[in-house]
Length: 419
Image 1: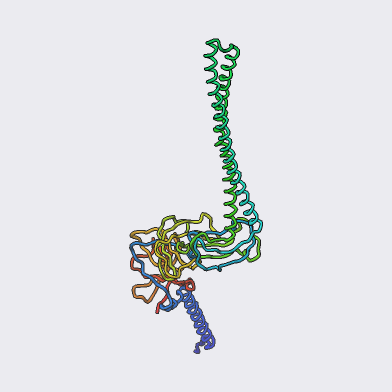
Image 2 (image 1 turned 180 degrees about the horizontal axis):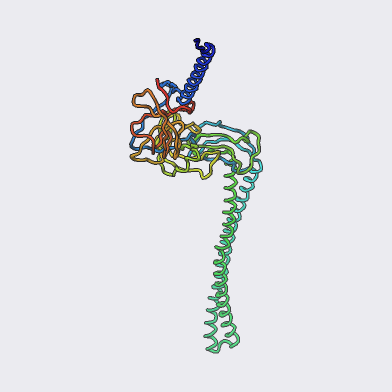
């Protein structure tokens, strides 16, 4: 008896379907496995990155700013009187002393005032001389008048004594005797009156003379003042230093008013450094803090002298006094770099400041493995910062080596290879 056999075609279809199903399952599993794999770690050339090792010990907090040298003492030369600029004698940059003439002014009206003041002085002096002579003559006249009265009194007194004797001897009438006594008494009273008048006159003479002398002194002071103003037409520097600049309005032939600024003279032997410090760092700067100023590759010690109370465009101006001798070539407006020591932190972990390291913040750094061939991203918490260093609070330990360069292009990776 014949037994029916299954169709071979159907058998092939079943086997083919099973193979396809197995292939699909295998591909899906492979895709899922690949999805779970981390991307391959990129390779970074070690020569292109900047690294440092975490240290423990003393860390100096500093702030830094750029600026320039400025004179500690600046003298603005102003016009002492009105005048016209006749001649400019010096150029900026020239050394001057107190008696150096910077420019010449002219003022014809002032010259006339000086001449008038001189004649007024001579007139007052002549008046004083006349007053002295007049008062002296008045004194002599009073003395002469008193002398005549006294002579008359002496004669009248002698005559009264003779008449008194004659009257007692009945040789002179009573009327003539009384007239003789009255005349002597009258002359005595006149002498007393003239002496009082002379005393009053002599007492008033010094006051009268003082008034005339005061007018002389006033005329003399006015003359000296006018002479001084005339001499000031030769405008002098008034101090030792360097002529920094002329006012833009100073030119030959120009009329200037009293008090107008003409030129600036700076004392080049006493300079200070003026630097601009970022506003956020300036809050820790205090007067008296030590500082160092880089002047043409020469480091000068100094101290904070003044802090501007007002910020300008995100910076604060800080003045630093210089304690060491200045190098040759130091001059006003020379560019300098100043570093101010804020404080010293003792026994702390610190590292050189990374590109993304900010004080009191957290940042991710790549810490290099001990083999030196790999670096792993780790979170690091920072504390106080300085110009080039920063305090490490958490995330790193002493001896750890980290990459400080900008690694932002590897933000998608937690691990990099180093070669």
